[in-house]
Image 1: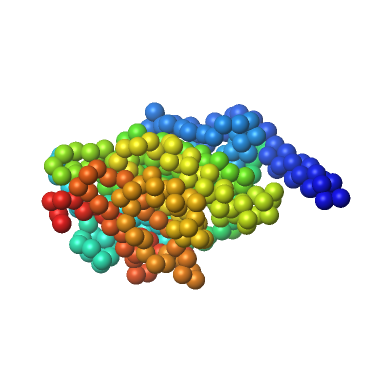
Image 2: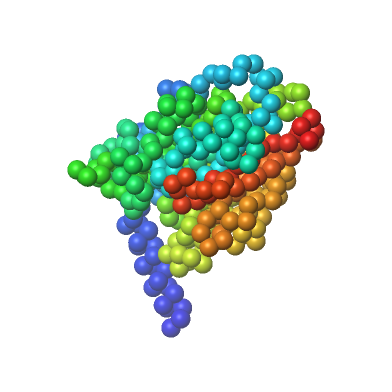
Length: 353
């Protein structure tokens, strides 16, 4: 009887998977994976498998195109961009509820536990975008449940980047809610990188999983580390909260996050890198995903005691740096309107310690 019930359950789950991941027209997914005018060589990484592709296509079909714009750095030549002068921030902005501009102002005024920082790189999760999002999604498209605040109170990631005059790389992971309504504009949400430094070699990394689509980002910035220019990969990522129905949602979540961590590590290669993200590590350092990332990023310092409610450490900043360089991380004193605390990191070099 047990085997019979298991077989029936497996069939039901498989049927649900087919129903919730229908094929969508290729034209519906061309927009969400298109190369923006600012990045004609946008790289793209996807997990293998036809079923995985169908799942990702269904989520992809409901969102707008990626955004990429790299501005010229105001500090001049690369040799002036000392790594120790750059602030790195990882923050889940709760679908545009976080006040990025106020946080940047506090960075520039030295109010966030370190000297003032005119140069910064922000690795954001749950950034929201209202511009160029289809009012009605294509047939077969999937969308996430609407969360966040209304457009009049949300911070559109494209508008924020323009007002701050910074480089931007944004790729939506999922549509935020259904069709546009009179009281709610169409929007999508995903990861973003904002930077006063120029961005290069953008890469979108679609992660494996059973539920919502997750797209991690990587871009490269030039930094002066101990007197020489080093190209450092910057990553922004957001792992699953829950697993799939097959694993009763919660029990398979840690395994899903471990698979996502491994895919991210493979895509980022082996060079110098800083990755910030909401990895949803309910077990903290004991999570398989966290352990894998700590091994791949050996210069990662101790993390803040809590970044979310109830003492949970969900947000991390991982460092892989050349010899003579170390990472440091602290937590902001407030959430700036979001539900997660921002964490602020920087690089200490032999010349600055």
